[in-house]
Length: 102
Image (tube, rainbow, N blue to C red; front, side):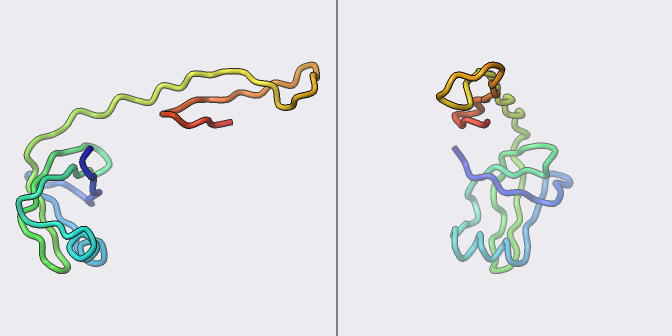
């Protein structure tokens, strides 16, 4: 699984991250030109390669648009809310991507 970074926009196959976010990428994650990551503008997801990685500015070049991920399937189950039998006391529990949500 690749890391995914969020950008404000992808225009003409290019995107950028600047400021504190770029500093985090270059100083903490130590990204370098030529490395590939997923980027998203919250509309589409792309496979992208880093063109430049400078202290406060990282630029990406998109390589391909990726298919959207399949939606998580929620399967409802019923369970009692207490161990003592009570009539009409049932709540829904949902299993989404391995997590139980009540």
